[in-house]
Length: 262
Image (cartoon, one colour):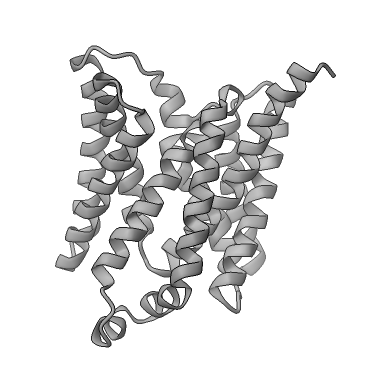
């Protein structure tokens, strides 16, 4: 295989592996903290920031992270209200954020491959995409390493954590920032919509009978890598889009797991 062709394949392959590791590990944290719906809001809040960043000539990833963080702040404010209609409100904001992003594209007169943004295109991933994914991995590792015990405590008993002086709201904002960066970094691989599948399905499987958060994150990442790699190579074999195929594999894995436990 020529060197240039080998290098061209190495970037999507590394992206597939990193996405398969980072998204499920993040998802395991989000599920234990009951923040997955908020993460869904964050992923849909990324698009307006991407559009604005492109319009003013800034790195789209920077705009996406800021926009996602705004979504995280909105989600946190809504969560604090503890209304019985909270999920409905968050879903409404989620849809509105995505709609705003779609409308901004023609209003600002910019060009965005909307299909690639929403559903990803691993085969066109660049060195810049890979670099962002590596940074996201480093941020996640540092976050977990520096706050592992707080992650466990706040996930199990947020009221108790606040009672002993932990700033739970600030912690959740930081978690929102980490989630935003993971979502934006994963955009080239599976898109801002389909990333929720990788945040969710492998984490659900990894959390099953896990003895600790660390082991749950590790198991989730192993499952995520397997699903991502199978989806990647299957997409090449059958000439299909990798992102949607990986998402379908996530559904199949959950369906198989449900059948096993039932």
